[in-house]
Image (tube, rainbow, N blue to C red):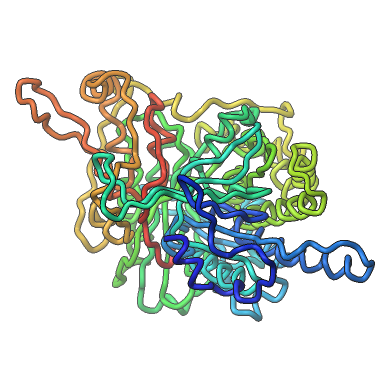
Length: 585
């Protein structure tokens, strides 16, 4: 399948003049494709890095030619993306600090990037039936920024990458790392044509080895390759990574175009006071409004349902009035790394670097990460160029990336909020606000330079220890929707006859039906925003209990289950293909 794609000569390939075969070379077991630098993941970090590297190579060769120095002989820069098209798996509430785009494509406005300027910026505290305006903290002001769909932005960046000569390949999930002699040497893509029972179907095709001198992992929040790399090399951060999950809908509302660029953030209802999170609502251009609820994955109640609370949020008079007469056109969910500076893993190992959400470059205080992801990708690109010039991908060379990132404006921005999430981990409380205020005065330090934090799943309590009673939201199919209806509007698809990509490593065969049911009430059926996990009657009537059913075809690849499971026995791995097909999210 990859061979046929290569044979189609995507943009940027026709001009290649080196003597290396464009078609992959077949080994005894797998096809092998050799590239110079491989970016894994077609989000903001990977695309920005690939574009920047392609241009830096051209600049290097121009200078080398003037000096009579050796040229880089048309190195091959490749980017693979698991989504069927660039942007298919991309979702974000996007108010964009333009600093990253300004550096990458200075004339992005003139080139028609799909963003609109922020025209109004509001912050409100919600009660159950009312709201009142709040002053913006200094770090949350959005004047001079832009809003839009990150989904649209990365599609646009994908076109720019191909125009720059990057070999961009969508629909190729990276299943595993290639590690030899303690050095990352590339990735292996998924086998195709594996049946649900593990056998080979008639269309079976083994995955390909894509070998690279330098691999840049941009596989997103809780990226499965990054997770394996960090575990393999022991390079996790000083704090465990903390995550949030956002659920999001895009609506088409007649007349919304008149307020294009309006930005509204809310705090308070429907979140409990001891839970950190909030909502956003952006007028992204045309009659499109995108809105969502984001919740830190460190709550105590095992029956807390993020999707349910998002539907509740929309019943607030303020939000319901905004959406009146509109139509929900898409839905999605995504986790994001929220731990900040102390939770970031080491940015490099021999042969590989991490960028974007894989590295944890999200400024939760500002609710922004796109500009930081782009800068991390660009700095990784500069280090990759140095590695190519020196023909050296050792840790000694690649370590310059971490140093350069920490010293860059992106690193300095994250360092100034290095203890923010730790202060707010128990919600918006007077104590938390005191620590945040002190950090603002002391450049992020607070009472001490380092605030510890525990992994979010460890804070979940047994169901007997919390009050799980909560009035369900009536789903009217107009303003509020059930999970399955919303999953349909995510466009997600997975071929049914393939192995499930959600693995539950039960310590015993009845763990979910007995131990987890008794202790936590099977929280997977609540924290999953896509109705993947379901407790159904056991086929064995004599058992007198339920069993876990995994509806993996519903999965929108948010990774919440991998993160929030209290036993840490759920593992998300790459499916053969498919997943969400997001639009305008």
